[in-house]
Length: 382
Image 1 (cartoon, rainbow, N blue to C red):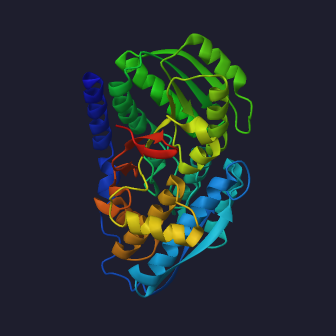
Image 2: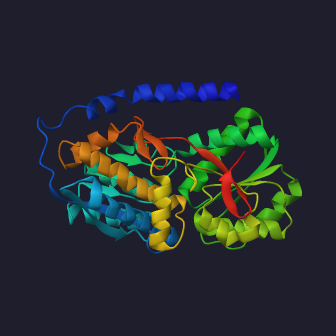
Image 3: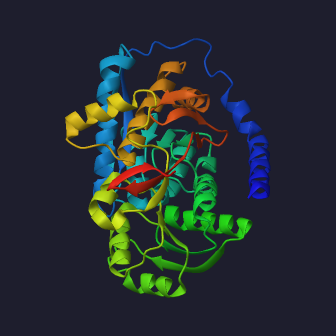
């Protein structure tokens, strides 16, 4: 494991050196004087408000609007942010159409979104080609930030999450033989599964089988039955929110008792799976009880407003708006180049995730956590 981590660190360092040209370009001043930024700034928002992951999109919208109200009431003074929200219908094609509408009809300089990695891979090139800033709150597949210097994303990349998460869980569970399941129609799920299997190979953990399913599937009994017959020590699931509870419920119905380690498991998923979620483990960057700057006040006020505790998708969206607001505050002007430059230079910003920075590829840097469901609640995996 130590050897593998050193190799990954060296590769990351090399990648950082290769990005020097981008950093050099970004950090050059774009205007000699700071523009008067008083007034209203329109921000495009692209979310899946209908389609397969619409329920997640609605929670993300709540997180963004909650941040918007706070910022407009306090943070930017004379500058007010305004959202122009477009539905990407949970599809890559819908995301591209939404980006084009916001850029060419509404004339925005920056877009928050899309949500899924599949939609982000399709839409980020549109932003880059038109030199418009785009920042995804939740797209975690590798290489998305490297699409160009105008695109950023808030989640940790799948390879980082897989490496750190496996390091933590392997040390405590000592699994030697595992099985994986993933959504073959979703970029994030397929990339996460690949990153996990790469990590397992590096540390000598045997992958007994890899089972696949698709978005919209509701019956996972065949895949789970095949996995059960192989008697793995742990099962890793890479999926979008709609499929995760069903997998956990059906696994417990089949009396599969080994640990399930599930991508981005949230309180909403835990509630939907009920007792079947008990003992499930996830790698994630936030917990409602974290003592990070402003987190407890945020959780309390969000609960008072919406009658529920925020999940990590709402939190990532909330944080994305604050990161963008910080960049607008620091930017020399409100054009896309100035905002891009300010985003690229964000380092050790206090957020509810803790200290937040962007690396040379516009990808996030902050502390990841391993969580486990105990007594129906996500808690630190210790």
